[in-house]
Length: 329
Ligand SMILES: [Zn+2]
Image (cartoon, rainbow, N blue to C red):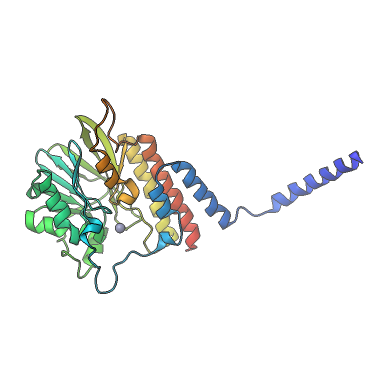
């Protein structure tokens, strides 16, 4: 009896082996599942905002376009936030949802991204003044990409203060096609490409073109100072998948995450910034960074080089998943 069972098992094992060899690879569903598990494993307890937005379809793909008849202007109480100094030379002048950042130099300010037109005057102009900075000293406005939540404030700084607006060629095109843009379209000015540097008063913002979210999204690497100590920052310029889905577009997005991760690692970036608090918790961290710190304790914005690298691995894994899930050619 024992021998018979042994033989049966041997036959079964043999059959199993033959069947396994003939089986096709993992199904699409298996692969999607694997990418999502991988994204969650890499994220650990971090980056829940990116996971929730990017790894969940169909929410991921929901268009965020303005409704017909123009975008509704939300009630001030729903977006207004106090401005904060977060490093020696970096100031957060955003809203509860969207961020704008002022990098101060001895020759003026480099403003990184603006917010919607409805908030730009209050959040950025008012915010800078409240922090003791002069909005007229903004020399450059670097726009990560040509969507309203980041570029509508650009024209104000260009017109009123004579600031130079920096954008990629692709996103200048995108902006040129937006008729009726609240706040007005910025006039085509500095056309930036990958590897360009915006320099002012000893500071330097290195541009890393990261196509995906838009065709010309600009990400950045720059240095800030914390109680005199230099800290490298990786700034992710575009995140969500609200673009016309295609395999080519997702592959471009994924390649961009890897390139930016490499640029961040080369610079030794220990801070990850974005233009949505959903992804970098800027609104929370700006307030938390006002709390007292123990001697030698780093800024709460400092998450470490490993975590910065993991962030881009998470966005890439979610993009792999969404590429399969949308089933686009
Ligand atoms: Zn966008």
